[in-house]
Image (cartoon, rainbow, N blue to C red):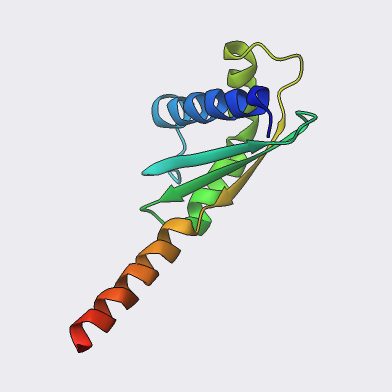
Length: 111
């Protein structure tokens, strides 16, 4: 991945997090953390990975309904010719890590 893409990913992650935390007024979006953003090399699509303490399906529905607002707000804040199409994806890596950690603890407790 190029330095430019990494920088854009980082900026978008920060701005989307701020927008969701402070400006989106959807009751389905509660306790959302943007874990990473992966923008394609041609800047046409961006996968936005998130975790939540709330219901995953409700949060995903809320994020999809707020996608237009988020994209419009991003266009006001980030200087890009074209704001990528946003796709929200639940980040399962934290749950996976927790399951691995629990298995390791279980193995140590058996010894």
